[in-house]
Length: 320
Image 1 (cartoon, helix red, strand yellow):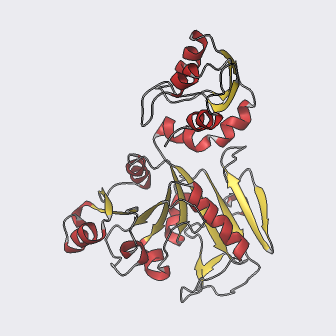
Image 2 (cartoon, helix red, strand yellow):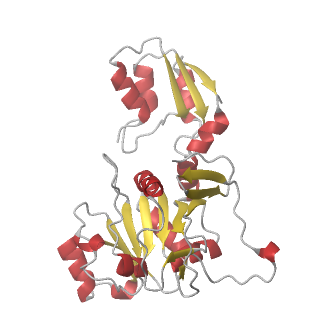
Image 3 (cartoon, helix red, strand yellow):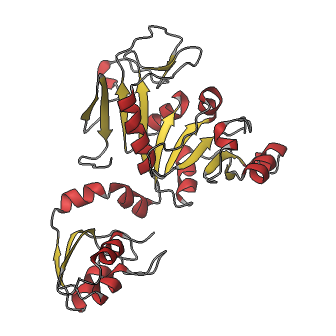
């Protein structure tokens, strides 16, 4: 869609001559999905452009600033630079690595469970916490779960916010085990369901049924592909950020391979007390407490009597 500069200038209704425009990120100077924003700024006869941070995209990377200066527009750079970098972390990671920004979300009981041993899980967290989850779904480009979560919970993985945006629904299903009775298959009217499965499943009966009858897209992988390989394939589709919603195996794998950028674990004041109930993470066996997995840059969020532990690898993320 149109970039922020274009929207702002259009709303100004030709009253921009001699004005100042403030942008968090260096205006683009190349033709992409839209024309260069610097050209519109110059055409609109701004006097000054205040820029928070430069654009790491090699297609821009200082060229936008240079073009503005050469046109006679005063450029003031670095105002609130750190804050502008923080709110652009998703874009910065994706544009520099081609890997999506990974955010892990889960709601757990006090004893770390996401479901009973019979897979009952609705609802562990309260309504306020679940509203936050919908904001995450609206914010991130994709949402990823494993096949077991689809089979047991039959989620829609859509955003229920008014005027919200549905993320791409990514299902990690190597053996193509889910059925066409799942919500994410037959409720694919927006064509945003993508199944990640082994190459050998291509052109199987189920593959062709999903593709031809339900407009499902596929990412085909090899048996030896790593989780990072899969993330690169997702990034190739232009999906710059992914909300990880589980289940246990998927969350554990992202932690084990250290492939997350942040997340939020929301704890409800409930106790199952059953060692057979489903944990949100498993597969670690430290002998010493100092070897426990520690989360950094913690922000505490309160949702009534639920507590969210929001965490990031890097300090200063400002996302949702």
